Length: 289
View 1 (cartoon, helix red, strand yellow):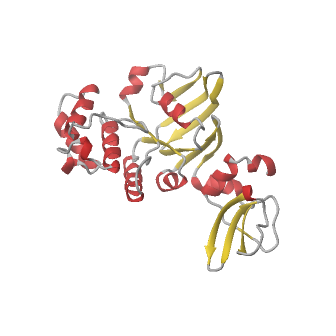
View 2 (spheres, one colour):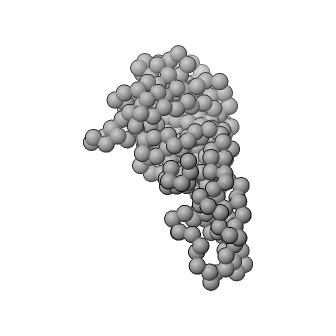
View 3 (cartoon, one colour):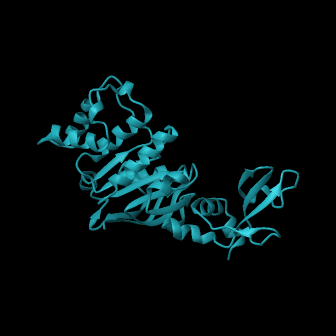
């Protein structure tokens, strides 16, 4: 399996460290999960060779990111905002990007195969202005697939999509991840859960946790509880430690983080969202040793 090794990466803007001595091993279908301002987009741009770090190294097997031209040959990139001329057709856009990537032989066949893979072949004569948000994101992935890259970098993949389009797009990413690295960034836990094999949670340019969904969820096992309360009852715990509330008839099922067991509670089986909230809100560093 190909592995992207990121070692001691640092990047600052206006004297503030956006990426702070970050190290990470990226493989398979990999998700960067973090709140807005966590440094996700900056890290993605560094990986996509759009900006350079102040220090640190990146390698894919024996290929160094200092070899920018060679890296770009094996990399596909879909930014959060994929804008192109709205008067162009889908096939014209693909032809344009194929030429930019130096694809000359069998160009039309390659384009048709990729459009078929992202379910846009029947829409290849449509103009960009007539595409839905989901179709536009699929076109973005199609251009990223040109050249058969070893790594595809996707920033906020489901931004602006409705629920159905989100589900379809996540399935597509999952399918395309066979045999290559797919690195996506998002603040939506559900996108990561349905798409990624490996995950890193980041905040303030630091990696808070990395591993599989199961491994990360287990970090907070024994510190997340559920308690049923009536609507008339006062909250038995500070609001900032509440993970979720779910109405069940005339009662609420309260899910919360606590270093201590509260009377009438049951220990919950933790999930990725529990760990994400506990880590990014700093609860673990405050209470778990």
